[in-house]
Image (cartoon, rainbow, N blue to C red; front, side, top):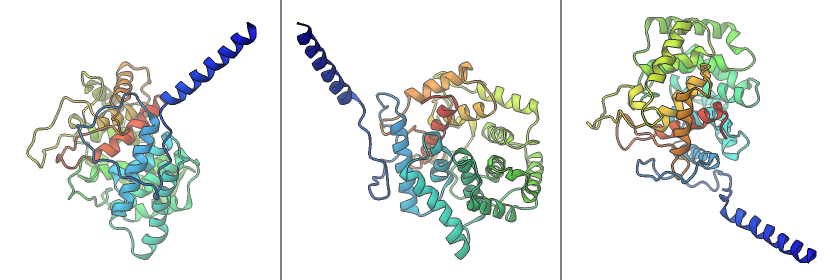
Length: 352
């Protein structure tokens, strides 16, 4: 009888294990340039995921970034720049991450040496992305990151800003110079090996402080970018200004528990449609939660906790978080950046 019971128990355990494996989410093959399948376009109609999955988020970010790299042969703030900043929040040990990082390094070592950058903003964006990536991975400043950062100061204008592309009209990243100034400050401040103490960086940061003094942030998103930068670089905000920005961000939370990008960044749509000022979205929620955590707001602060809950219950089936473009309803590239900030926000709150 004892042997029979033991045998039955063993069978039950094996069946249970098999059922658990069957029910478990299949492990996706790592995304590479060889097996890449472009993700479907970002759409408000995509169904929500049945359950939150960081693995699906990683798969979407890997696919979107590699697809942009392969299709357009360039870096953009809303896709592969955001990717380099965010991917280590999940894991830097992924073929796609290595491929995107290599592509960025080869821009500096090959294309910039042969024909130069496409425009000054590319220098700022690549330098900042690689600096934040170094900070999150090796904790050492890569020689090519240093090259990009050093070059960044050589194209800074005397008034503190950089020539920034605005023709696309894709807020917040390709719409005005203020974003570039704060991104440069974040990159320089985050760079390992005390890069911000180097003479060129000190001179450049002095110009940035002057620019921000002469050009106060015009809206809450710009204020939040300065707040993020101020967690790395002294003299960008007073303690009172930091607390005022935090208070304003908390007050902008929507009833659903997240944040709406359209309330952070006022913008007149090019397609003539109305902005959705009420719905929480991936970019608004991910960005605000991440910046609040960078600014020292505890993860258990009720609004932050509600933001985390919103993110974990509003991931889409593909792994992304949807955000509607503020400009046109066929340009929802901000969903890529929103998905990047979502995983950064969750990591900053200790979520896995």
